[in-house]
Each structure stands twice: as C-alpha cells, then as structure tokens.
Image (cartoon, rainbow, N blue to C red; front, side):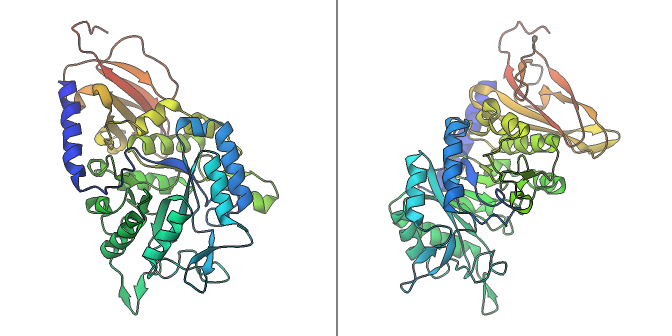
Length: 422
C-alpha cells in the first residue's frame, strides 16, 4: 500500500513535469551560498573578490561542499554598468578581474551564479551612487555574456519594470530570458524572483528551475512565520525541474561586522529555536537551500542545521515531492497554532514535522500517522532527524514537546510485517 502511494506520487510528478523547463537542471533543489547578508546587514554586503574566494575556500573545508552545497552566487552587488557595446561590466573596484573570480570558484569545484533584473535597473538602484543596469532589452546579450564566463546560475529579479507608465508582463520577460539562456547551449539554472505576485508556481516551471513563491525572507521571526504560512498548499507545484523558492536561509544571523569592526560577526534577528524551524521547514518544503549568512564563522546552530546530513537528505530526496501541511493539532483551544507537516520520501518513507507557531507556550503535539496516505492502522519505525535518535519500538503516532516557534522533525519507516507491537 505504501509502495503503491510512492509510485503514484512519482507518476503524478512525471505527468506534471512534462511542461518543465528542459535544460536538465534542478532535478533536486539547488544548494549553495549567496551574497547579501554576509559582511554587512542584508542588502549592505558589498560583495568583493576577497569575500567570494574566502567563501569558496571555507566551503571546501567546513563540510558544505561534501554535503552538496555547490553554488556560489552573487546577488545585487557585483555589476557596475554597460560598456560602449552594451555589455554588462562588473564593479572594477571590488572585482578587478571578474572572470578570474569565477575561475577561482570553479577550480574549487563550485558553480558560479549571478544576479540580474528583468527591468531597466536592479532593485538596489536608489541605494547606490549610480543606477545599476538590469537586463531589459539585453536578455540575449547578457545570456551570451554569462555563458562565456561559465556562469551556471542566473537569478532574475523584478524591479523597475514599469516603462512609460506601463507594467511589463512577467510571463513575457521571464520567457524571453529563459529562451535566451537556453539558446546559449550551456545549461544554466534559472531562478525567477517576482516575489510570488502573479502565482508563478502555476506557470513559471515552463521557463525557470525555481521561482520565489513569496516575499523576501528577512532575519526576523515574523518573516519566517509568514513565509511558512504563505507556502501552505504549494507543495504540489514543486518537483524535479522546478521548485518553490522560499528565499535565502538566514541561519545564524545576518552579518554586522562592518559596523563593529569585527569581521565575521553575526547579528542574529532570530533565536536558535527559530533558525532550527527555518531550516527544517525549508527542507520539508523542498525549497532551495541558499545560505545568505557568513559561513566563515559557523555558530553552533549553523553547524547543527546547515551541516545536518539527514535533514539535507530530506530536502534532496529523489522522489522530488514538496512537503505540505497535512493537519493541525489543537493547542490551547486554537487549532491553527500547532501544525502537522509531511513530505513523502523514496522507498515509501515519510519525513514529518510538528511545528508550534505559538508565541508564548510550549505544547505537546501529537502526530497520528493515520493522517498519511496508506498509513491507516499501521505503525512505523521513528527516527528524530535533528538529534539522530532512533526510537526503540514501532509507533502509530508520536507526541513531541515543542517550544514556542519550535519544530521537531522525524523520519517514518512504515512497518510492512505483522510484527508491529509497540
């Protein structure tokens, strides 16, 4: 029964992905690091050659590369202008030889990514001394430039897209860049970032390998909570070739060293409990895992989450199903405070999460495995994926104490024999 469910889910995914972008990429969610919140507060990290090289060096030695973090991506921080021929040019002060930076990253075994915008200027224009050009009117030219540099990931934002009083159509603009990237003949992962305004999960997989399914993720609990809520019901749209992107991981806290003259200093906006919830839920929902904080200074919670092999395996599971909420547990008379989430995995197994949204109280949350398809009346072997604890006896349900804003996560292996006594 459980094996049949897994096969059914896989077949449904295959049917859904007939219209997926055909570049052979994104069979599992991408993993990597992204500039934006490392040396300074989010948006104030003026990335540079030294930072990027140090990140590449660190990722080869701190376990991230071994665990599958393969992309090193620039956000809205690298470009400067267009030259007389209209070619995009990196900021010469921070990247004296941008192609040499890319080569260094590649030689370390990582793929390099860049940021652009669908409009005439990028989102950071207005916070800089000059306007940073977007790709509008240059999609084909920029795609060829990126391919010639060996760029393997492109994020395209959605700012400054009103021309002569008329809004551009994201369906048209993302399609044009998608065609331009594919025309280079080089497989380039394409990430759409129009903040979920036009329900991209319903149509973007034709053009992109991942799409932002909601607003920017900030380093504070209200942002994390709201993004989790926003993505309820979207799991069915995720799968091989196309993924709901919950935005960057803020695990460990954004950088603030430039204000304190302390390189590598974190100024966390969330608690360790909240960062734990962030990472678990990003894994359950099969979101890209792109870390935007300073991995050169790994705090304890960063090590416990970002380097958690078992949680990463849930995110990278080859069945390719996005997890979703499957029910609620009534906490203190409020049926929406405590949530039950699940993600089918290969071999008929499941990852489940019990999530406490309550701001003040801890709750004992029960997950009855009968909520899962094929599990009515069945028991399962249970493993805590965060503590790596294996429970001795098979269970039909599990009750976990969960602190405010906390999440506990387990793997269920259904018992298929008659010997299921607890």
